[in-house]
Length: 122
Image 1 (cartoon, rainbow, N blue to C red):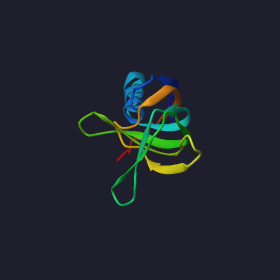
Image 2 (tube, rainbow, N blue to C red):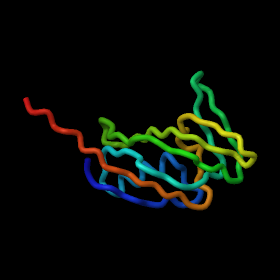
Image 3 (cartoon, rainbow, N blue to C red):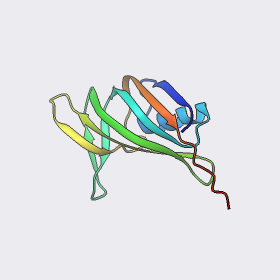
């Protein structure tokens, strides 16, 4: 394991894209999400059948968040985040967060841990 970063994602910035942006700013090529706290304006989660579930706010709380960021062959980063959210009526939903469809409400704090894959010596 490598460095640890604790950072904030600004209001109206997308959760998934914001995590990717934070990793780029910290110079992390691969990372794990180790903790998070915050809410979304609205949430959009994927389902097993390839569809989406839209959860309307104005403040959708993130109950838990897990995931990783991986470096792609072209050098870009791709975050895969899964979590559990609760709407304003207390209904609970879970699944993968859809990139570009999960705007941060007020603020969002996240802890990222850099992953340094071991080089294989031949």
